[in-house]
Image (cartoon, rainbow, N blue to C red; front, side, top):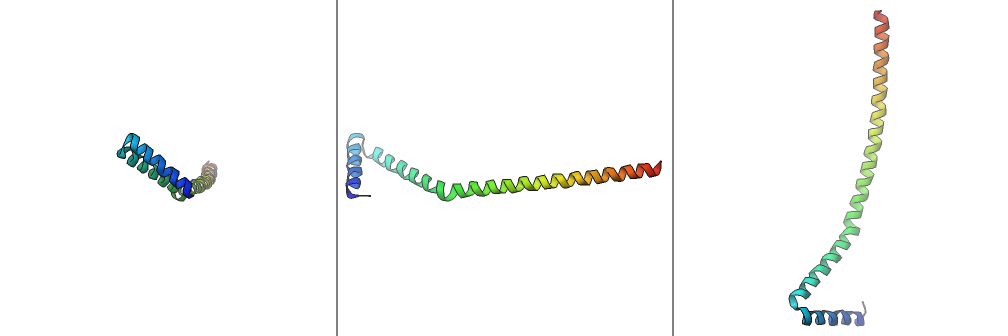
Length: 90
């Protein structure tokens, strides 16, 4: 940040302070800091959490698909056993 930019920010804050009062300047500073914090947290915390959660859900979907296929094979095997047993009993 250049000295001119810094000075213009300070001048703007002084004008706002003179016009609206110190509480408004303090509130504006708090809101600005909250915005900067939220922006920083978004990139460093939220994005990695969302990416890892998406990967987890994808792995869960693949696992459930595999389990479904295995359960279908088991059900088919049980049907075959039941058919064989019913043919032998007749």
